[in-house]
Structure formats: C-alpha cells, structure tokens
Image 1 (cartoon, helix red, strand yellow):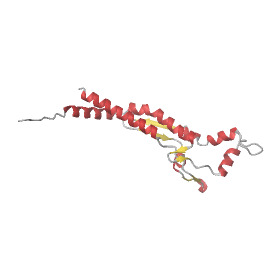
Image 2 (cartoon, helix red, strand yellow):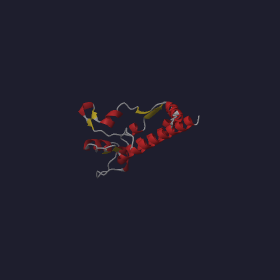
Image 3 (cartoon, helix red, strand yellow):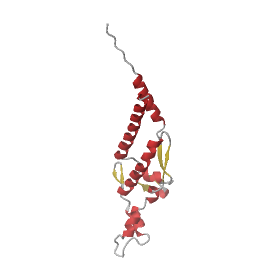
Image 4 (cartoon, helix red, strand yellow):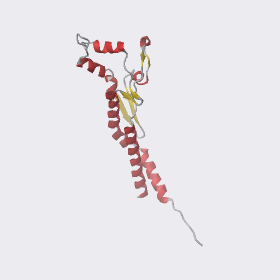
Length: 164
C-alpha cells in the first residue's frame, strides 16, 4: 500500500507571518509619504491630471492674473513677473497638504477649504465655473512603488512566519 501525506504547517506559518506583517504598515506608509508628496508637486509643475493637461484659463482670468501688479509691459507682452503669477495661482493648494499615517492607511488631505472645487471642478460664487484641474491623484509610478513596498512587506512576513 502507498500512502501520501500533505503537511500544510509551513504554509500556515507563512500565512500567519503575512497576516502579522500586515497588521501594522505604518513604516511602509511613512516611506511612501515623501514620494507621494513629490508626485503631487509634479502634477502642479506639469499642469497635468490623470487624463492629460489641465484646461486653459479663461481669457478674462488671465488678464486679471497677469495684469495685476504690473505683469504686462506697455506693449502688452507678459513679463517674467506675470508668468510667475500664472504659475503660482494654485500655489496655496500645492503647499498645504497634510499627510496622516496610521497602521493601516496613509491619508493625504488638502487643508484649503476650496481645494476640492479646483480638483473636481464646479460652480463657485456669482456662477463662475471652474473646470476640473485634477491634482489629487497618484501616478502609475507611485502606485507601482506602493504595490512593491506592500509585496515586500508581505514577503518578509512569509519568510519570518516560516522560519519559526
């Protein structure tokens, strides 16, 4: 008679190690926080959302932004000062992110009350329509980095669980 036996003890230990490693991911999230902040900054620098470039500003908005404080020459050309003003219009939103790390999450939130209307678009006071300029998203590079960090943590848990 031939008998076969399957012992799942190593698999069960490995899975227990993965579960234990997944209970507190604070270190993984802390490591990702600066990369995510840099990714959001890049969205502002490139004026780009997940679906492509942000919509252009209305001509009236541009005149108001550039014309204020001497942004135009007498001939109507844009001075460097005017170009900086255009680039910095969303500066307050860009620099007011708060990241909170816990054992199971990394939450990024912008503390500017009106940041959501700039990200998602919508109507504001006096019926003005602001087009969506998506900045609160993670690029593929960051998603891949997050997946790699979480998989690595799981692999470490598997190895430590089986080593018992």
